[in-house]
Image 1 (cartoon, one colour):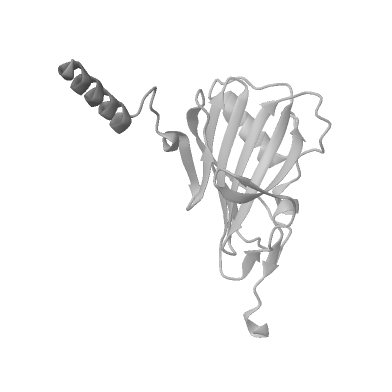
Image 2 (tube, rainbow, N blue to C red):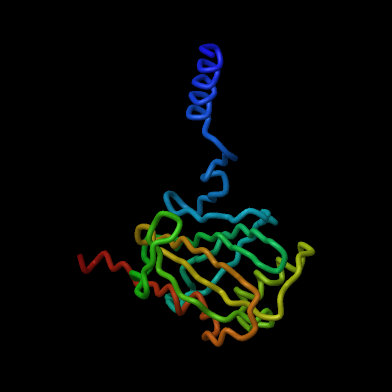
Length: 193
């Protein structure tokens, strides 16, 4: 009886040490967007590649625009997609105006969040490039999407953004706005300091 008691105590100690039930690393599905900005990629989603898309801001000076580009990693599961993006403003003369809107806590940090409707036949060159890329990889595209957009300004010149595309034909949200409407640039006038 004493031997059985010792075996039971050893088994209990092993269960406590190694945990009982299935184990999983909660961080295994976290993808870093930039620095501490991370997104949880649900199981079933696969990395299907990446692309860069240039956007033209409203700001114009001496015949040229500040350089802006969304560097994007695309994760997909069926017709659903998550796009992890960073956009940085080039040069020293411009910065992104502080973002305003609804703030939420998601994936362990704060984000600005908006929900839009995205038609895959959009006239927006930026969104059309994402849809074209997804189709080009042989992945299916839904007739319409509800797009949750999470973004945050990191410093003055970099935006981290996550687009969550879920098939949805009747959401009734406003159409996804152009990046130039979302991320207004201001000129950093060194002479006024």
